[in-house]
Length: 202
Image 1 (cartoon, one colour):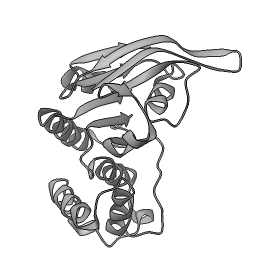
Image 2 (spheres, one colour; image 1 turned 135 degrees about the horizontal axis):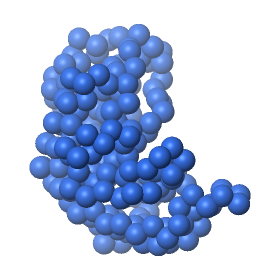
Image 3 (tube, one colour; image 1 turned 180 degrees about the vertical axis):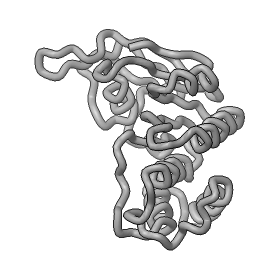
């Protein structure tokens, strides 16, 4: 599903990624581990085409990753990226449709996820009313509502207490069991040990 081949990236004189190679199959969960500044987020952003590598390439489903493939990738960034004054469900529908699915399919998927994650009662709230953990749940729904083949999660457990982190681990494992390839970065080594089939240390 995903191959990272000889990826290098520098910012000025600082070498952040140096000849990184990695592969991920459908149904696998892979963890990227490393200290702050090790390049975890940079690598994820390269896979999402938010950054270009200095050298190397990303292969997606057998071909060089291109813009058209982004419709098959879900991305949960570490930083919050919500429209604070939009209502929760309206925002989820809007962002899901940007991935190319119909409003009907987006609504069915989001309703299912809202029910699974206990979010139905939040549908008419504004994002600004949500706690950090609630915002993280919403961003997770937005990342998965279009049923991506590859799911990229940057510090997905940030802002979650132990119970919510366990809920998210279960959902990630369920997605992988259904064939989704999952690439995540985390400081939570316990979560990585519980979830990941393989890890990449940066």
